[in-house]
Image (cartoon, rainbow, N blue to C red; front, side):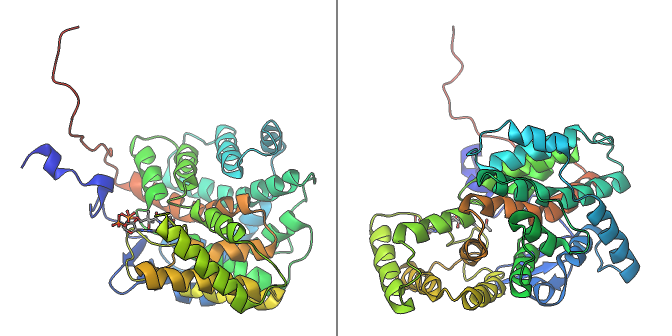
Length: 379
Ligand code: ACO
């Protein structure tokens, strides 16, 4: 067999290493975090508990959770130097670029940036988890010409995230839908951004460099950028708050048929691993339904159903997590460009768990390539 025949373009079907962090089973559409079904975690656990589960391998005891909550609340405020770095960027810079820059600055300013002792790595992961929401919240606000809102340590992670973004105490229903999205986005084995983080870690680079690189990988439309892109589809179809659900569904169906006839790729549909449904969609769709009821925006459900039904009928390609997550964040009031940075806030847990796991049993990740350029020649 020649080298060319051995190529697995896109590494499709390649098992690159083993992990104890999560298990994706496309045959049963299931996703386990450290053995627990993600749907159960989304139903029953706080995001803080899920973060500790991903890092430590077990759900925390009450004392462990209390200690983490204390650390998280103590590290929430936006570092003035990070704010200054963000302020150097244009207000209309893409929030993923702002996020990538902010994490890089946070890393460069960390006293223990180069220390890869596992306990130090875990502390850095927890501090970054705590510090990142203020980056998203501030960027959202500065885009709207508003100043920083200080965190409140009487609020949990999700409540405080929404508080720092919007400056209002969020309703319980909204906090819960946000928490569900955080739990569902947290981890998904060797997806492109996690694999990027592992590649960077495998060179013995530092944790913040690995997260910064992962953010770059997450930005693209084929990965995390799809939650933002889903909303552009909704906007292209047109959102009219006064439209009936049925009429919105019909327009969405017609849009999808025309888009597929033009061979367009529809964001929020399809998945490299799941071919008969993304395990995370039912929990996220239920959270979206609750938001649609809460905000009384049934035309959004019409658009959602119209697109999904037309796609199923035409190609039987099913929604991925980004499809219900995008309109959920829209209803909460986030700017569309902020959706993928919210994904980062969640995925910092999975990325850093993988960074720690990679470091514990490291081998430099360095595949081969088959050459198809000119044969050796004279200058
Ligand atoms: N819209 C239209 N057609 C699609 C879509 C889609 N969203 N997804 C797959 N297809 C079609 C392809 O055109 C291809 O058709 P063909 O065989 O006639 O050429 C076939 O289905 C197989 O598609 P691939 O792109 O080869 O499948 P792959 O496994 O490589 O891609 C991917 C998976 C990249 C996610 C793809 O489905 C896609 O681009 N989806 C849209 C982007 C998206 O939503 N990404 C989010 C991923 S989930 C996450 O990050 C949380």
